[in-house]
Length: 321
Ligand SMILES: NC(=O)c1ccc[n+]([C@@H]2O[C@H](COP(=O)([O-])OP(=O)(O)OC[C@H]3O[C@@H](n4cnc5c(N)ncnc54)[C@H](OP(=O)(O)O)[C@@H]3O)[C@@H](O)[C@H]2O)c1
Figure 1 (cartoon, rainbow, N blue to C red):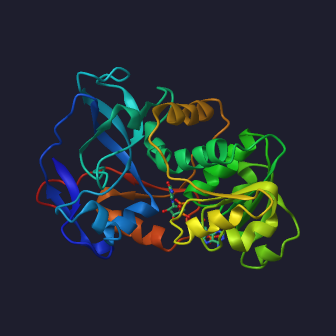
Figure 2: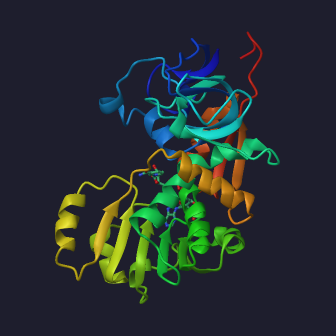
């Protein structure tokens, strides 16, 4: 099958067109023909080799976690999907494997897309959407009228978090640069802080939840902005997290938690139901063809995405790549 592979870690131009063997299915796995994918920061971090000591260097590597497409085949133990179903999901293979004609993942990775929707944009939902949902609903247990501060609200995770906080009935303050203000105002009722003009640490408000998708600050720097019992959630690896957790024992029950997104079909289905009900939107900043996935990585690495980046799988003809 056709795939975009890397044969070494490095800059965005390491991507190459290639033919690789089709994945073989385990009993609980689903094989899909991929129609679209989306880029997440983890993809470029892996392309650079940031995770090679954990995941190895078994080239050729096919990157890409977020996909949407059509089910082609299911393993014997798969209960919820059948060939022909339109699905989206986040693949649970080492390095993903999504930048290919066909991709597989276990059943818990996928959820069905309603037939009255164009399935393409749904590739931009799974990783960022699940991260936002699990952070706000499960880690923060965000409640109606609670005050939340979302750092990095215009990005992939942030734009879902802003909408989910609104669905949960929170009082929302966000940080982003001025050019994203109208985008964010269309997503939810928000208080907007331009982080390029205001030092957020100087703000006088306090919050029940601070959701940090940027990683510029940490619990120690921001704990004065939490109410007693408030919680700071980060989604980036923090070298001093254990020390910060220890310090939090002495900070009037202010807590710090780290979220690592978990594959969960029901959670993904909940997000899709919200889209179906018109409560949640998938916002696409730019679309690239799969032949230009390197450009998509370059764009994302600049760090100013508004919503998500979509990859369309229009494969170059044999010999013309
Ligand atoms: N733990 C997990 O399970 C998990 C899951 C998903 C993602 N992550 C991590 O979370 C991070 C965010 O992911 P993402 O997909 O949201 O990335 P993204 O889409 O690339 O985020 C880009 C956004 O960040 C904003 N930004 C950059 N610096 C900022 C600052 N100082 N203050 C406010 N906003 C700022 C940018 O806004 P401006 O244009 O205004 O600068 C832009 O809108 C990544 O490092 C990713 O690896 C972790």
